[in-house]
Amino acid sequence: MRPPLISYYGDDLTGSTDVMEALSLGGVPTVLFLRVPNAPLLARFADRRAIGLAGTSRSETPEWMEENLAPAFKWLRSLGAAVCHYKVCSTFDSGPGVGSIGRAVEIGRRVFAQRTVPLVVGAPQLKRYTAFGNLFAAYRGTVYRIDRHPVMSRHPVTPMYEADLLAHLSHQTSLRSALIDLAALRAPDVSARVDAAAGEAEMVLLDVADTETQELAGRELWRRAREHGAFVMGSSGVEYALLPEWEKEGLAAGPTEFPPLASVDQLAVVSGSVSPTTEAQIRFARNAGFETVAVDPIHLSGDDALGTIENAVRAGMDALGAGRSVVLHTALGPDGDRGAEIDQDVGARHRLGCGLGDILKRLVVGANLRRAVIAGGDTSSHALRQLGVDALTVRMPLPQTPGSPLCVAHAESSRIDGLEIALKGGQIGLDDYFLKIRDGDRHAPT
Image 1 (cartoon, one colour):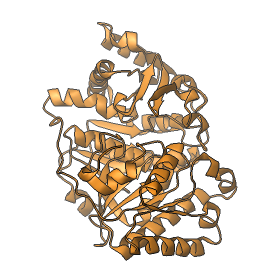
Image 2 (cartoon, one colour; image 1 turned 90 degrees about the vertical axis):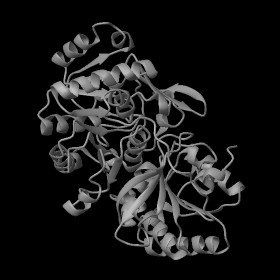
Image 3 (cartoon, helix red, strand yellow; image 1 turned 90 degrees about the horizontal axis):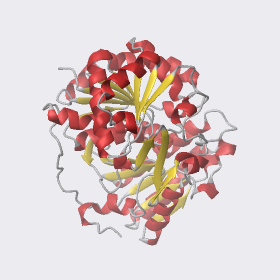
Image 4 (cartoon, rainbow, N blue to C red; image 1 turned 120 degrees about the vertical axis):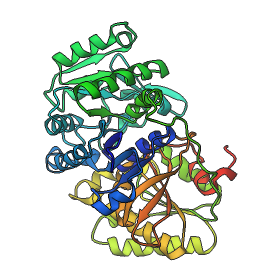
C-alpha cells in the first residue's frame, strides 16, 4: 500500500466526514475508519489517497487525550502521509477541561517530533473566516464574531467566549503562538515571515478570509509540511487550502462529480442535538409529514435506558409501518437542553449517544431501511459505533450544506453494509436538510 497523500484524526465524527467531503470533492479518494483498522480492512481501501480516523476528543478530557491521542497519532504517522491533520471544528469550540485543542497540539508535537505546528481554521466554503486572528462564522445568512454567535457563544458544553483564537488557546496550553495575518499573507516575503514566526513560536495561525488568502495559506502549509514536518492543525479549511496546490502538482484530480442520488421512500433520523438549527429542521420535517418522537434524555442515559429504547423503537416502527419517515429527538432546540442534569452523571453523554445508536440500528434492521441520519456531533461519534460500522466513504457531497455529506457505511453485517447515512453537526444545514436526504435529486429546495 503506497503512503497516502494525507492522513487525519477528526475530533468528532461529523468533523471527520466534513474533511472526507472536502477531499472527495477535490478529487482525493478518501476512507474514514471508526477505529484503527486491522491489515485486511486497511487493504480493502488500498486505492484511497486519504485515510481518516474518527475520534471523540472534542468531548474528552486532557487526561483522555494523553491516553488515546498519542497511540492514534503514532498509527497515523506510521502511514507515511505527506500531511497529517488533527481536525478540529471550524467553530473552534473547546476548553481547558473538555476538547482541549492546546493539549492536542502538545501531543502532536511530541509524537511527530515537530517544533512548530501550523494552524488553519478559516474555511469560506463553510462560511467560517479568520481575520487578524479573530474567528467569524455565519448563522442564517448573517456573519457573527464567534463570541457573539447565537449558537456557539451559548454552546452547552464549550461556549465560545473569546474570538481571538490565540488568546483562546492560551487558556489551554503554555506553548507560544504567532499569527500570520491577512496583510502578512499577501506580502511578497510571506514565506520568510512564516519561517520567522515559526522560529519564535510553537503554533502559527494563518488567517483565511477568502479564496485568495486560502490559497496563499495552502501554499505555505504545503511548503512547511514538506520542509519542516507533516503535522498540522485546524478545520477542514486545511484541506480546502491544500487542494489547489495539489491540483497544480497533479496530486489531486480537481472538482469531482458523483452519480445522481435517488430518493428513498422512508428515512429514519435520530438526534441528540440541542441546536436551534436542528430544531428548525425537525419542525420543518414534521410540517412536511415526518413523524417526530420525543425521547427523554435522562431516561435514555440512566437506569431506565432499556425501557426507553424499547418505547422509542416501538414508536419509530409504528411510524415506519404507516409509511412515514421519522425523527426521534432528545431535545427540540435550546429550550429542551437538559445538559446540566445529564452532566451530573459521569458517562451519561456517552450512554445517550449509544442509546440513540441502538434505536437507529433496530429501526434500520427492522424496517430494512437503506438511508438514515444521525444529528449532533457528539452524538454521532458514539451512535454510529453501535451500528457496527467499520468505515465510511462519501456517497454524495451536499454543496448546499457543506460539512454534512451523505456517506456509505462499510460493515461486517449485511444489514448495515451499504447503508447510506448522513452525520450532521448540530449547527449544519438548511431547514429542509432531512427532506433533501430523503428525496435526493428529486428534492426541490425551499
